Length: 223
Image 1 (cartoon, rainbow, N blue to C red):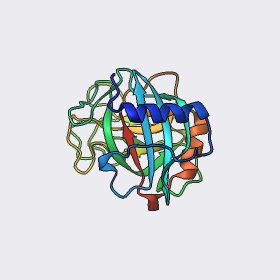
Image 2 (image 1 turned 120 degrees about the vertical axis):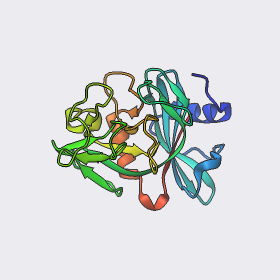
Image 3 (image 1 turned 60 degrees about the vertical axis):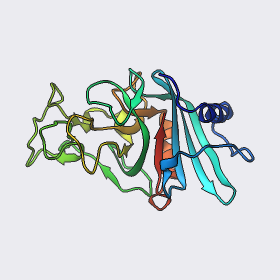
Image 4 (image 1 turned 180 degrees about the vertical axis):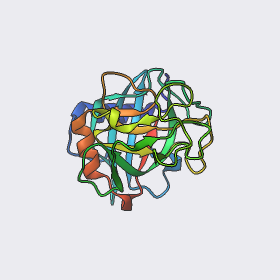
């Protein structure tokens, strides 16, 4: 995958070199045009299926990096334009998306709306379902209770490592267009590349969950 913004790539690479960092003075950061009123931003700069993920905060002096990791992962086929991305392509959608809720198999200290999932909880990825691209229980389901096949959904508790804690990326929601893709999350690293989500080490996810807050109108910028 070719990166879309060389200035962003350069600034994020500089951040990654600092590791879990205190903000450097006066960083140069080109804010995406679609950031809206966000004062917290997570940037994802991909190189193939690998990524540098950085948390930024906007203060009186502008945007400053808070912490980050060079050990992020994205889809096994890299990043593709979110406007044309299709389900089942093993790609991560490029673009800037709101982040409004989280979930996980474990309770987490976070200011975000957060659901501790149980055995009844599925993330619906069946394009025929009226619950497409949202969480729903087995009761009243109009989708097959399976992860297999073209109408399969995700049984969240079956992924206790990746979904120990996760944030929902609001790609293809409100409205959710069948076939464009469902279940794009920021979650904990598994064993390798993802099917389309963004993943980071558990320690980084812990910091993100403690840092992120709804009042900052947080967004994630993937490119």
